[in-house]
Amino acid sequence: MIADRLRSTFNASLMAMACLALFMPCAYSHDLKVCKTSDPVGPVSGSFRFTVGDYTFDVGVGYCHTISAIGTGTFNVIEKATPNTIVSAIVVSGAGTAISTDTTTRSATVTVVEGGTTTVTFTNRATVNGRFTGGGSIFTSSGVRVTHGFELHCSTTQSPNNLEINFAQNSFHLTSLTSVACSYDTTTGVATITGTGTGLYNGAPGASIAFTFTDAGEPGTSDFASYVITDASGTVLNASGDLTFGNQQFHPAH
Image (cartoon, rainbow, N blue to C red):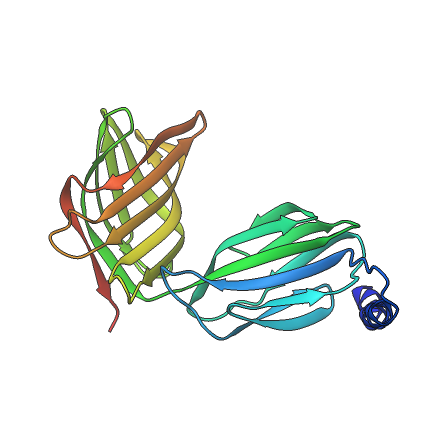
């Protein structure tokens, strides 16, 4: 069990003290470090709780927690869900490698190897409630014009959630909003909605979408749209950019 492995932390500390006292070179190996950062799109503060096996600990924003001499092998790092926040990114660096990361489940599976520290950094974003409405157009990298219109709530349990996208005689119609989160940057005044869903592509079921829309204020020329649509054949649309016309508006919940 990991608790047994963690008992070696005290022994590792004693060894480090002995190395310093005897002027011996010390090698710190197979450590696991968990760090917490704040997403500037929706800044967060405070501490967040993590578990690695049966070991539980808290990490404050801007800080890291190191599990010394954890041993080598595969470990699952899981962040406990915190109200009104999402994990917007998970980055694994250092000596070990990432087997998988999932921001939705707030988890990372990593390998810890001999000879260094494996660092897992979780970035959190504060979320807000409300809905987005509006639409407009952008262009693909090849110059194809894409138009969209929507009414999307910041929760999958609220409705309606409608999204229509049209380009080059093709169309996507959202039928189910599977994940969504909204945030508001108090410094820039930009509101953002990100989400995923499934729907119809040219009338056929089985398509999926990942999207981001922003409201950067009036008149809408600084609003941003991004969407990736896939079906059984692969990616059928990948476009992003500021609106060439239109307006996207965030309506906060009261």
